[in-house]
Structures are given as structure tokens and as C-alpha cells.
Length: 239
Image (cartoon, rainbow, N blue to C red; front, side, top):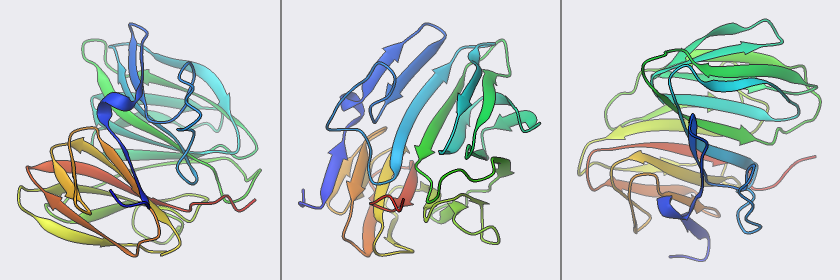
């Protein structure tokens, strides 16, 4: 492994089983406190959640954070103090700029099946913005990088208050492609949802992750059919 890389294996993450919630924390969160794993650049939280049928997070506050939710299976019901209310399903993505402050709740919309999701928090590029909410359905094309988040309101996917780009991808076994950074000063944090990848020479598996910085391009090859999330993020806060 190069000196500008860090690997977080699936079994190295923080873990909690609350009965209704089973969760893995890539970075320090709630009862998981690891001083060596607080954030990667502006990426502060990457939680891998399983929520039992009919259960969820009651109304709670956030501020000055960009929050992104990506359901992997099932349906997630959302309600917030902005007046937004709806259901986010597998194949959709949600963003919420907490800014000056917002309260929201998230519940499994179904009583008879679990919902699984990735919940991701980024530090914003400016404080105390006006809170906002948005969600979008995306369509993954095989062996392509599908942009789902960017800093630009008129670009593909949803926009956030940060110089960050997220891409989801489904690769078939043997497919190889380079990811070219939008901003070479950014870093890459790649999380494997399922399958096996070789990323810049490192063999990684389901729920493993790798952080890479000081690179303009990242080589990715699928050892098996694989789904993964690429998060291109600034390595330093700007405020």
C-alpha cells in the first residue's frame, strides 16, 4: 500500500446492535470513538445501517452538515421541519443541507421488511446556510460511473454545499476503468457495497473501503460483479 492510501476493512469498523438498529461506523460516531478514525478530509460520517420493520430515528436536530442518505434495500420514510415529507427507495438518493438548523425523522416505511442504507455526513464549505432538502431517482448503467452528487445545481445528480462529487457504479467481473478526479486537490474515498475490486493495486471486498489522496486518477478493476460508491472530497476544511 502506498503512503498516500489508507484501507478500512469491513471488520475494522465500529459496530452496534440496538435490536431495531444494526449499524457499522466507518468513522467515530455515537458510542464508537476511535481517535485515528474521525474523518477523511471533509467526510465525517459513513454509517452502514440496518433498520428493522416499522422502526427508525425519531425527530432530532442537525446543523452545519451536508447529509446524504442512500437506501440499498427497502423504503425509508423522511419528515423534516422544512415541510419535506416522503419516501426514499433503493435507486434514489437524498440530500439535506442542515445549515442554520433543521430537525427530521427517518423511519422504515414498511412493517414487514428491513431497510438498509448508507448515511453520509460531510462538513460543508460554508457555515449557516439556509437549510434545504432534495431527493432524486438515479439510473445505473453497467460499467459506468453515475454521478449522484456534485457542487453544482445545474450538474448531473443532486448538489451540496461542498466541492465534492459522488459516483455510484455497477461493474461486471473483469471490467476496468480509471476514475479521473474532478479536482486534483481532492481525495477519493471508495466504499464497496458488494463484490470485489482491485483499486490502485489493492484487493478489496464487500464493505471494505480505501482512501487515496495526491492522485489525479484512480485505477479500478472488478474481480467479480461489484457495486461501489466513489466519494471525491476536499481533504481540508475551508472555514
